[in-house]
Amino acid sequence: MEKVTFLVVDDAIFMRTVLKKMLTEPDFTVVGEAGNGLQAVEMAQHLQPDIVTLDITMPELDGIEAIEKILEVSPNTKIIMCSAMGQHSKVVEAIKRGAKDFIVKPFEKTRVLQAIYNVMSR
Image (cartoon, rainbow, N blue to C red; front, side, top):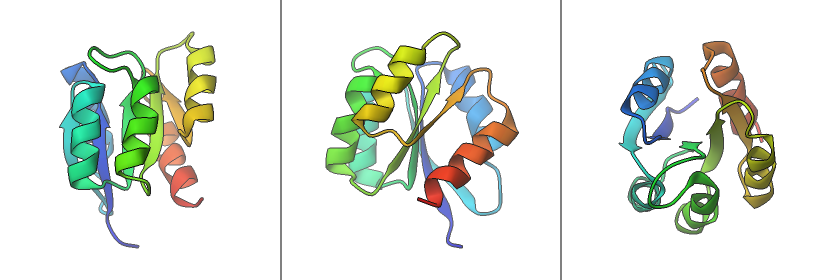
């Protein structure tokens, strides 16, 4: 298997750091990180990552609005939404717009890896 590349997007540096630490598998490489949806779209266009982990609630452009824009500029990218508890309706909206899976904060490494393998096998 080739290295799977990731763009980690969250407005909280702490959450990006937690997720990056979970993505230290030998076949994974974090190629970039962004703090809002606008940065995520620009970076996805430039980096063409295999997977974007995308927070729902962010300044400038939230995760829901960013999904379609990311898929326009990087159509082969798979998006995994990162949500807080109680954001069920937003997760459903994200899936309708093209996200492939979701993980709930606080992150559990087994669930993060499960989501990654789920979207890569599609």
